[in-house]
Image (cartoon, rainbow, N blue to C red; front, side, top):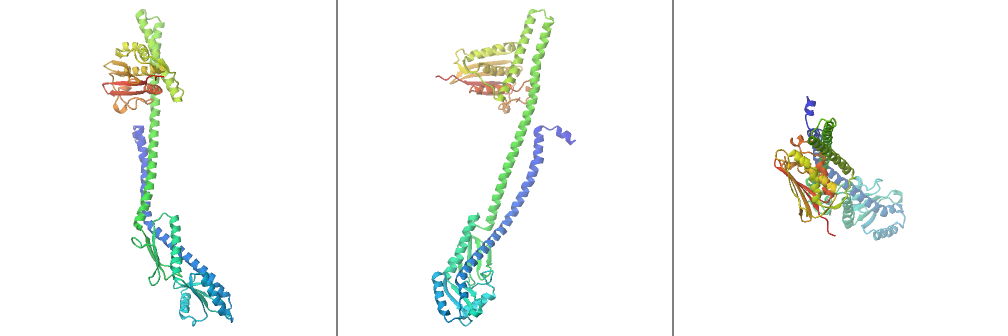
Length: 513
């Protein structure tokens, strides 16, 4: 039952059903799933952005630790190799301390503590930092405390023991260590990520701001204490010019826009494919109709020629007037057969790109009169009233005489075939500015306006029941258009259904030398 219903549908209807079921339905499901995916991505964008901020903060901490570790290694490590218990240790230390302060402007003071009594405050800070495990390095050699102290427990108590340490310059800590490291990290981050400017504030345990580039415009996205040994410092991170919701929404819109663009391209490709398929299918159908129509076009004159030849051959006609009429019919049908074959051959040459024209200076009035003379039997036999207005003083034109004659002949054939009750044909020629105009009009069945732009296409025949009562190859007007355009001219049509049709050929005049 379903197969029978499908068999009754046209090719266009079948293609439409195929597109709806096989393409648009899966595409709609895919589009919906893509939308859901983008909506979920919008929600995960916030979490992913916060994760990126945490990772960036971790990188900043690692770089600050590395910087402090280098300072400790350069300034405190050599003290561990000194004989602090020797009589000259104090002088040697003083000299070393002076060199360190001179070569390291970031250090405000450097010292060695041999017992808790040397410097109670510093030793207490050291003990607290060691208890808090505020080590800078994986080898647990250096400690950082209170945002300004670096300590190095001297390794060998037999050499004097104790703790070496430095007091860092506050300006260095704020502007170089914290601000410099964050700035470099931000520059690197923005160079590798298309993200909006980030607002960062770092403060110590007393809420003293160590670094701040700008306040966040909306909410703080991430507020956390740094890892050891900076656990007393707190970081607040947000966005300078937007909010995370706006950022996620922009990301969603960009992704949705890209998906929509791909969808439009895909749909456009599908539409173009369907149109091409439909056009090829219609062309295949037109070719099939062409074969059928041409077979009829060839068979009819051949049958008439065979019939009247046989009658004459058998001597069944004694009336000389009848014989003359039969000879005229045979001659007419031969010309008709020859014309059909010429159309087919010319179309084949045009399709293969082998059609050539021989242009000569010609009298258009003479060409038209010759064409009319070859159709005189048709006009008389079919009862047509033919009116002509062809001035003898038309200016000469450069044309291929046979090709233009073929074009005019094809238009006259159409006027004869598609005329019904009112059998009138008019042929006029005149000069219009720099062109010669040839008008061929009839009072036939006419052409619907919606189909007038298509009648010059190859194999095309108007979808009208009256038209299909008349057999034809569908090549005549296509050949006329090609011939006229090969002469740098134009052809146009004016027609009303039931009123008639007028074809106008405009050919350029010979240019004066």
